[in-house]
Image (tube, rainbow, N blue to C red):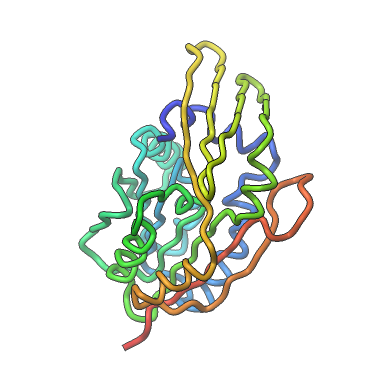
Length: 244
């Protein structure tokens, strides 16, 4: 997952202007400050190329970024070295998360949780988050909504950057959408990649969170997609671990 796509991912984000992590950062930071102040230790799940984790690395916050894609983690480590930031980026599956330490905050952006397809995968991640959050800690994550899936990922799309062309087409089966990517990148062989994602009913997400012992503080909707109508394309969830 996200192997060939990793090499153009950041440039693809910039086609639409501000990178998503930068766009959503004020919303995330407000929620972090409200619940834990400045986190001493923050874990970013599905960290991708590291944009959000690197943004959080200031003010003494220790940041750990985890992603299942070696190609994405390689990009993130290169960015951290280039920016001179001591973020620890590790390859791992959030479903079997075990960093052997507790954290003040967990984040999971870029709709990474929408890629969890197996029965019980989402609830397993929530249990792992609950095990790693200190009492009173906060978990902030986003999801692409059903509206987003039905609005954005139906018709084939061709997107062009300075040195790449990306063709995307979609197959839909119930709650699951399969995205077929054809990537043309200057100086490199053309590549193909398949990404699969699904949408979740909000009531089901809430139930899984509560079963993991987490408290839902808020769910808000917003639209980060330029030129796309509607305000319910993204869900931003704020969840806390009960204090002792």
